[in-house]
Length: 304
Ligand code: DON
Image (cartoon, rainbow, N blue to C red):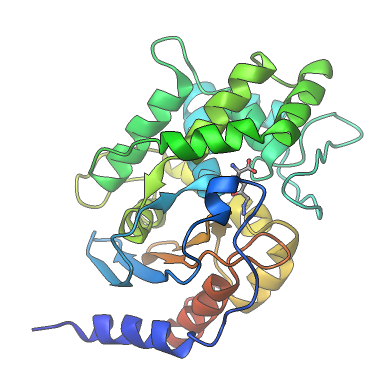
C-alpha cells in the first residue's frame, strides 16, 4: 500500500508550485543552464526509511551542503580544539562568498561560508588519499552508493572561480590556509561538484539526526560530540545571512547549496532534503525555503 507520507510530500510540491521567484545561480555557467523547474522533496527517518516525491532521482551538485560533512571529517581527523583554533563558529552576517575574517584572530568566521570551507578542505588529512577522495568516500558511506564528481560542472566552476581563488590567496597570505591556494580551491570545488539526489541528501541528514551513525549500515561516521558541534554550527551559520529568519521560521539546523538543495536535521527524528534551483537574494533555494517552512509547520519540526 502506498504510504500516506508520499501523498503528503506530493501535496507539499503541489502547494508550493506558485513559488517561482528568484533565479538559478549564474556565476557558475553550468548551473545557469540547468532546468529551473525541477523540484523534489525527501524525508528520512532515523531508522533509515526514505520517502521522496517529485524529481527525487534527479542528480544535482551538492555545493555548500558538502561543507558540514567536510567540517565533521576535519574534526574527526584533527580534533575540535585544533579546528576551532583555525576556523570560528560565529555567523558572519555577510554573503557566503565574502572573506569574513575575524579581525582579532584572523580566522574565517565559520566553516559554512566559502572562506571557512576552503580552509576546512585544506585541513582534511590527505596523507593516505587526496582530501576530495576521502570526502567522496564519506559521501558514499552516508548515501550507500558511489558518489562521483560532475567533472563538467567542476571544470565550469574552476574556469570562473577567481573569487574563491582570491579568498584562498588572502587566507594563505595571512597564514590561515594549510595547503597551497590553487590545489585547495580545486579540491574544494570538486567537493562541491559531487552529484547527489534528494534521497541521498535525506540519508546524509538522517545520519546527522542519528548522532553520526548511518541508520541502515550502522556505520559510525562521526562521534556524537562532533555531530552535536556540527549541528550547532549549522543552526547558527548554515543559512548564511538568513540564519536568523530561518531559525525563527523553520527552527532546525540546516545547510543550503547554490544548486538549489537544502538539508535540515531534526536531532533524534528525521533528516529532510528539498531541491528547487531558483535562489533568493541570500543564495538559498526560494521554493526550497517555502517547502521547508511547510514541512516544519505541518510536522512540528521546530525545535523551540
Ligand atoms: O564556492 C562556491 O561558490 C560554490 N561551490 C558553493 C557555494 C554555495 O553552495 C553557496 N550556497 N548557497
